[in-house]
Image (tube, rainbow, N blue to C red; front, side, top):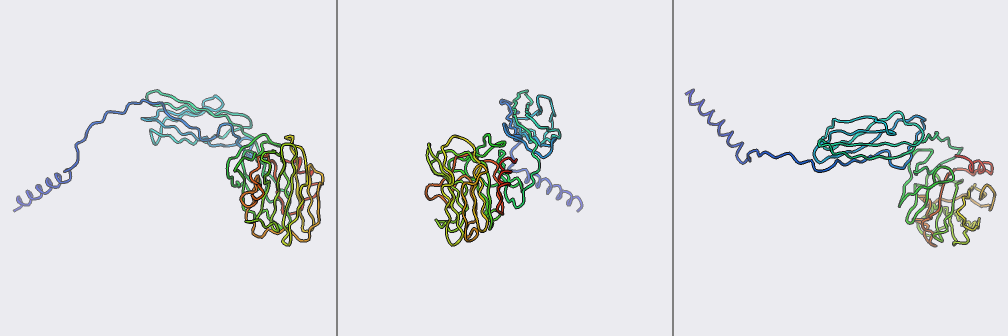
Length: 351
């Protein structure tokens, strides 16, 4: 009886083994793939031609490099300013290396980062980027300052460190101080208006007008439609021989025009514009001098104005063809109070 049970178990095991392997193809040897291509290589950070900013004179930065090979990577070597920095020859994924290397000795000035990737066959590829490191001191905002845009190749608010939203294409050129933002067709900067749309309001910035296109919005905090009894609209109009800049804002009961507050022949020169509006008075300065002022009956009214745009009237102040402005903007400061003449003068020379 015991023998019968043993035979039954053996038969069952054999049957199970046959059943489990039924339908499985036999293993077929595959020849190793030929290494026919060079590796591919990409330096993700720093970005070629850009600036690395830090509030530390000697900063830590993370170099980011991606290397890929069709068969297997052998090594990736990083060079900093032509000196070998580090070699990687062990990778979690032998075909793709995502390298993040903390470098702790980045000093001010111009630098290069080069990466060289080599595969098992000895194929190599190298890539390099040039970048500049600058020390940017921590910004101490003035009393009542709500937004500061230095436009140092970014849309970062110098007070909060947060970036404003860009629609279109950002271009940065040599500015009044460092780099400046260049407007472009179908391009504008935007943000929610809550922090800047205050009962008292001031803005000061450097501006280099571009006469093309003939009409453009400069700063717009405006409602949907053409209700100008609320909001704020700074605009540029003119042609290749004469330009003018004007202002319209709403105080609830009526709209106020200060247009034009300056007329000039476009020469590619910078001008400093400061607009300061209290609950009773509006004053405009150009290059530190008062060019227009008026009394107002009631404070600014921001009803139905949820957003602000810079370098265009879009999306709400596009009537009268106040679309994107292709001028240069630099060192833009917003305040929740009326600033005075001495402060305007100070902002002209500040960084």
